[in-house]
Length: 232
Image (tube, rainbow, N blue to C red; front, side, top):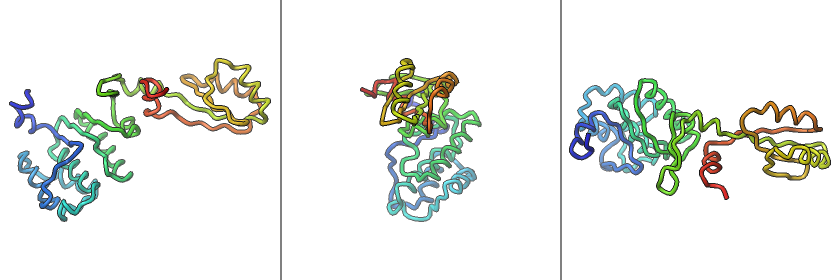
């Protein structure tokens, strides 16, 4: 359907949350929700009330006196309250506290389980990792890659920081394992990156005198920087 000529028809089955939301500021939150519901032809407001409970929204106050987080909740409820089949979200958790961000993720997973199609732009990589099936990475206004989330996760490296008993032992480790990618050496500590099967690496490590070992998983953000030109 054409987004201009068929706008009214499209709106019947589309939920949309813009990055910058424009409200009728003199209305209360409840009046705003009722207004959007009437425009969308929503007569049964059961889902609206469910969403207000989920996001702990008190909609009685004037919108102009509401915080960014409260306004964001209204925007989310407007996007979802008609139970649309297609939902477009631009930075949907902007202004939400961590508890409400988790509630939002739970909502996305619930809607996905119903077979809804959701397009979401986000700079919060944990949010993307928890909710998305496919991810398009945009660099300088162009799509740099489109990845299945599982394949993107497979690109993840693990970073191991090893504390050796002595600098001499660390030096021996470095000299005997040229294929292991060393990220940083600091005193008796070395940080290495391992991708894929870690059994061989852990087997190698047991041959040396190590006092401590710490591990950190690479984030989706770090994968983006590593694979798509963000690093020098």
